[in-house]
Image (tube, rainbow, N blue to C red; front, top):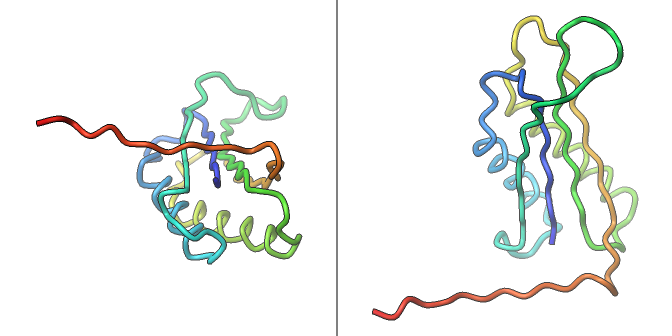
Length: 125
């Protein structure tokens, strides 16, 4: 926890998902809400098939969904959303002629149902 899901449309030439994920992870750590950087799991998915509205113009979007354990206040979630949106705005170069929408959503994970395990297999040498 937390789990960050980044979706972006294929027409956003120049978007570097690795760099953007790192920028978003830094924003999460800077928030002070997460104790250990290794707990942040972030992934990016490029959307090859998408549609924005019904117009004919070139359009695209970048969407972040952050899943965190339930219990944080609305104010904290609003701050996390604002911080992630700021990181998106800084981390994306808008391509000319493309109307781009950026969005962030925070969702609560059920504390009673969430489990995780972490391990490491050492290589015998």
